[in-house]
Length: 68
Image 1 (tube, rainbow, N blue to C red):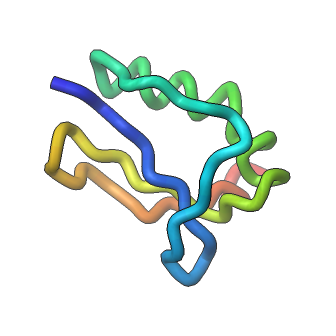
Image 2 (cartoon, rainbow, N blue to C red):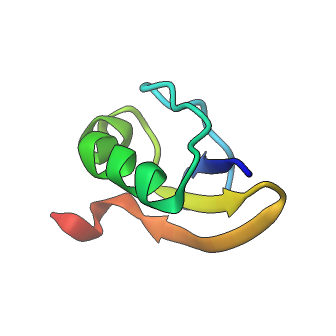
């Protein structure tokens, strides 16, 4: 099973992240990675993210600026 992030503008348009993510083995690994990189992602043009496990959407879109 692979956990992945989708990076989007606030209108839902997908954007290429400035920090290249990997496929994560667990939800916790994916969330930890986002916790380390959300500021760079936000500065690079991503406004929100969605987490998926394989093809199933787990949650999102979640705004990246909510932590500020």
